[in-house]
Image (tube, rainbow, N blue to C red; front, side, top):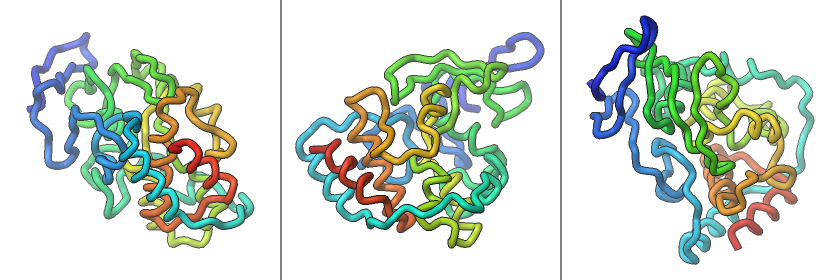
Length: 239
């Protein structure tokens, strides 16, 4: 059991994650890490990259990202990347552990996480330190959109940059890969939409190098190109 259970009304139980044991299906960690120390995306948050050495390593990674012209969104729908947050991906952390991807990510990044009574998966409340704004958000499931799980590399962007030609299984992987997923303010996520780094960066300036580094990690992992303008902006954030 991951911690003490406390009844809340008749509907939910609180599960304290502080000092609790991780489960093999969904290994949650309280250690927040910089992107280069979090290559599989299983550690929470998006810690700012500040040292000269780490910035140099980030630039080296970004330079590996291929450049290509941006294609059309013709034919794009969310369904092309699988059912929304379904636990059907293969080959990525948390895959097929019995919990929906969104809940895995809320549990990964949330503090004081509460689960629905009788469930080890369904998150109903938590506190989130939003890396994109630096603000603390108190979240409850009845106001679900207040926190949204951002695809760092947006799905529509992936489609325009070549994912339209991928096998669906690969699209399902990138859509549910925790490396590509960060819970953030719903309003900020909606402002971002399907934009690349040349058009949108997190409002919190100190995390922008970390954000473009995570963008590059996903692009390199899936051999996904970015536009020339996006790559130029990515490099600029870490200089």
